[in-house]
Image (tube, rainbow, N blue to C red; front, side, top):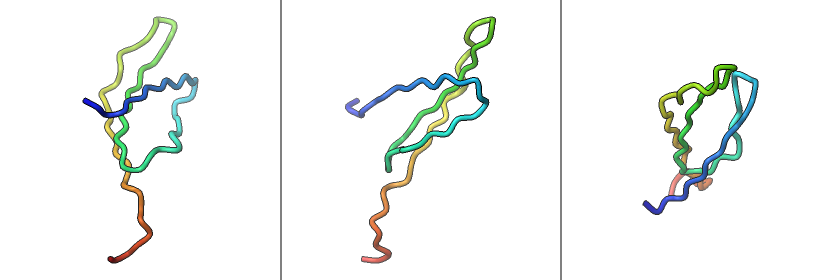
Length: 61
């Protein structure tokens, strides 16, 4: 598999996060897990999200 892969971790005390500057025509995979005094929880199920292809600005060809 020759696809580019990048992994990022976001640590926050918030219950929400904004993901910005995504690339057009790209699939992103999200998983979430909590950390408490008892340690890390299990990861959530994968959420695969695809961004739309970049617009050409042309309505018709």
